[in-house]
Picture 1 (cartoon, rainbow over the protein chains, first blue to last red):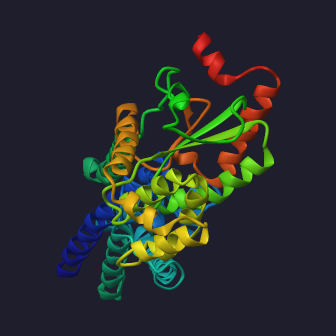
Picture 2 (picture 1 turned 30 degrees about the horizontal axis):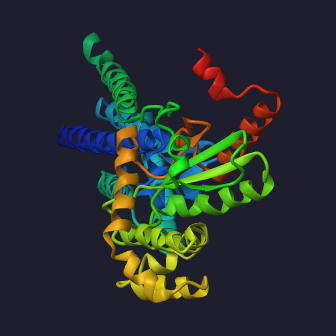
Length: 141
Length: 234
């Protein structure tokens, strides 16, 4: 009973965190699509990162993949909170994939672009928090 | 029990709809308006009085008009490709440059004044090219004056006069006039580029897209179907 309550609390919290990431990624996607990241005068800090070649795969902005990932994380966490066992597994796998992607983006910002975007760092913090929750979650899951 | 069974679906569905809706609303709010220059407000209306910087033949069918900030990296990125376009279309393309130094860039105003001062010695475009080419160097310098003096020297200018002009009211007024003109047209960001009086979508301001837009304008003009003329005809 206590484990079940802890799980509900844990995944509800994870869903809320994923929601914050979803907001961030949606904002970045809109910035990319409106061209704000390709010019000066809009967002002064981030165009070096968001306007770089690493910010899109072909014509698809990486931020939109972030929207997908965070929405999936939110969905899996919500279902997991409602005791869907399969959603718990999917959530764990997704968070680890997001963690690896975040490491890559931090590497790109630090060593290749020598520039940081605060929205990207916020996203990285969220993924680290989600990873921490996954690591801290009961092993019985 | 049934309600609880459907609750996660309802929550996830609601968040999905909310995300798409808020994304669409934000996109509409942030999307810059498509700017169009009317014939009386375009640079060509003032070109007779010598206050406009134009490179290329006067009768070129395609005009690329840029509102730029010398310290803006995307402007610097596009400077080379635009020069290449001028080389590729020597008879069909002319380029017009207006200053729009952003307050967020520490040396942008001074760079604009440097280009204007060079213009007073007949070297505006030469200085324009050097300042863009060397953008990464002077942008980081705490004091840009020695670097701009050096560029003036390389271009064979009178450095003393150049330095005096840079601080003159005449040059500052010229830069301010460009900025006011840009603001009155609704320009907010740099680079803002017009091709035959129609602004290029900021989301499509990559070198490749710009080349494609100029290619299309040149081809269209060759067929005698200038999109700007068609637009005004409507």
